[in-house]
Image (tube, rainbow, N blue to C red; front, side, top):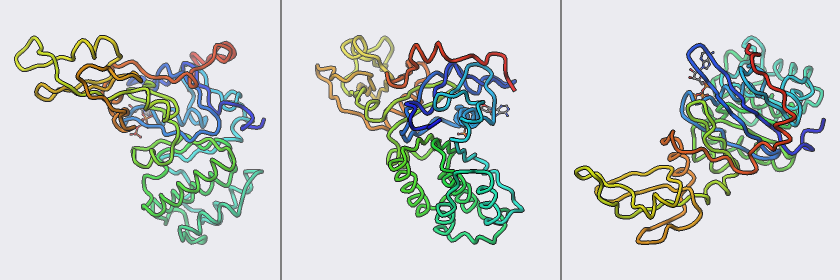
Amino acid sequence: MSGTSHPYAIEAEDLGRKYLRGWALRECSFRLPTGCVSALVGPNGAGKSTLLSIAARLLRPTTGSLRLFGKEVGDPEAMRHVAFVDQERPLYKRFTVAETLRMGRELNPRWDQAAAERIVEAGKVPFGARVGSLSSGQRTRVALALAFAKRAELLLLDEPMADLDPLARHELSSLLLSEAVERGLTVLMSSHLLSELEEMCDHLVVLAGARLRMIGQVDELVPAHRLVTGLADPGPGEGAGVLPAGVAGHHTVIESRFSGRQFTALLRTDRDPGGAYESVEPSLEEVLLAYLRSAEAPPLISPASRLSAEATAAAPHAEGKAA
Ligand SMILES: Nc1ncnc2c1ncn2[C@@H]1O[C@H](COP(=O)(O)OP(=O)(O)OP(=O)(O)O)[C@@H](O)[C@H]1O
């Protein structure tokens, strides 16, 4: 299998994971194009780590299926092309950094020792230090060095930048981007740092309440919305305004807020509503926050992110195979 020759790095169909307390991930169907750098965002407990862990085969789904470059996630061939940096950065604490890299070299036929050493050296992490004695940022750097040197075609990164200092963040995100461009690498990385994601990612996967809320290329998701302000119509109650019919009646309203008689609404439309309303293209942050705050708003799955009928027909189901 050549990962990059397949158009989709990930295809998930009806993917779900249930725990005793409820669903951590539910009815998740999408595909992620090969070569994109995708931000996986959502509030705490949204299901981001669960999705990444299923894709890294550390967790079995309760429902549905997931394919990597067209192969079932359980296929050993598929896993050779995937590197996962877990939120816990699980490394052998008693190994030195050099021993950790040596283990990586022995386990991975495509290992790039020079790349691993470059990443470790750039952070001035001593090769002789035991992993257990490193700071959390230094451990993250070693975990990222292992992931990069594996020469995987899909990098699954769970909050990779969370404990790095600003310089290290800058350096490693530049590396990530240049690798993605040069090698057609696909990256799916979770993060809560929106500004960082905006700089790095061209694609977005948004989860909330265990469900997929939005997915697609940033430059198609954002222009699909307008942020509209204007005077609200008087509502039935004292002081409470309502959206004018010209706004609410013709567009999908993702979120609306009122301040005095003024309303602000995020609409899913690429046209100005006209009338006496001001309308601008929202920022990525405004779109994202509106979807996260409005659980009842319909999800937005871009056409390129939808599973094709053939993919759906070909995918076997994992119903009842919970680990
Ligand atoms: N081993 C487990 N047993 C029971 N519930 C779990 C387990 N792992 C995760 N969950 C639950 O599944 C839900 C999704 O968790 P997950 O770790 O995927 O969220 P997340 O989006 O990665 O959150 P965060 O941003 O805080 O890292 C949460 O409600 C969590 O409590």
